[in-house]
Image (cartoon, rainbow, N blue to C red; front, side):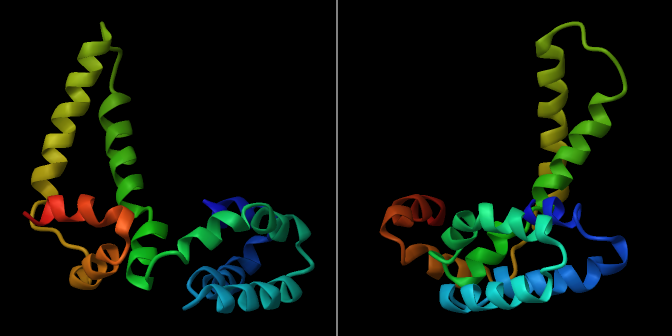
Length: 149
């Protein structure tokens, strides 16, 4: 979301190099490297202060990603699955009016079941590494173990 909010201030001709420079920031291997990459990014793109300000105001959220391993971070900053679900819900709900709230909830439930079947057998790349990185965190350990049983 930060990327989308920041490119509002960038001309379309610069989208690709701008987002490539940003990827070095949030994709950095450590928090220290992230800060260093952000300083470089800030100097390189100083002609777009609005875009840089979006990141400065929200940098505490970016820093929180580095509490987790790189495999977990990749899952956390990838929103494709969530956006796919929202898109699917929009498709089925825009077809008409609903006589009551339960009619809408039933439709969304049925669509969720269809998506569940569609995605069954899907997997997250390098899931073993993700699980190991999750198990390192004491506050997540019990939640993760619940899904391993």
